[in-house]
Image (cartoon, rainbow, N blue to C red; front, side):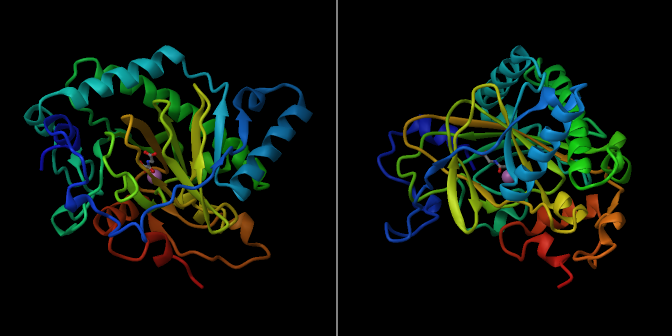
Length: 343
Ligand code: OGA
Ligand code: NI
């Protein structure tokens, strides 16, 4: 199908084309949640030489993971000009002619590049209701599969992936300690030197009836930690204690959320948080996402040192197998994580 971007540009849409009606009528329509500020973590404190300062930020990290599963990282050290270059070049990608974009789609059995509109990753033909989103998604580590256009894309994403990998490793060091584990526990157990990183750029044009459509329906992410940047337009919502909240960003800060494999590793202490992307009728929203996971071959299990007093609550599965199961079942079936729950 044509991209949502093209659809919006080519027609003066007054109402939502019916195939995008995720909710049938105003009774069911989506109510965006009240705005909330999630905890803010000052990343620079993780390398503080003052043991009290470091202990405090580890405590804060643990609390943020346990109570929200979402936090904002400031002072992360990723240069502002790298981030703005990344937004610019992704915008250029979405601006390319449809045909040119689609030529980067491929069906690599392990590391596919996806250039899609209106769908979640898998089973496109089975999907009845379309999502109001265009996206580009590809693996950046341990193998790098970036489209070759726009020309600057590859170098910029490569640098961003290197920086975010480092950030993920250090945050996971603090999170390890917050669980009472050695600082390098997660790094070693999840074989982070060959960690799996997936990059995605999501593009949500203004929607004529945002309350009837959705950008991404509620889901959890595979992996350990997901990083998200947005272009200053809000739309990310998370579930907390059964209620939906809309998150308010901070310019330059990175949203971080706990994902499925951190829930498994922590034996359920840090839950993978449910979230969704909602729409608006005024501005294009863009989000740039990096999913940071274990190495493709790591078999993820609850960390044995956490099982001295509690039994394991999750079974085990190789990470890449999980990603593939999830890719093919995302909308219609029981969440992959539930399939691994033991009781
Ligand atoms: C995702 C995601 C939310 C957003 O890409 O997995 O949850 O706000 N994105 O774009
Ligand atoms: Ni997500």
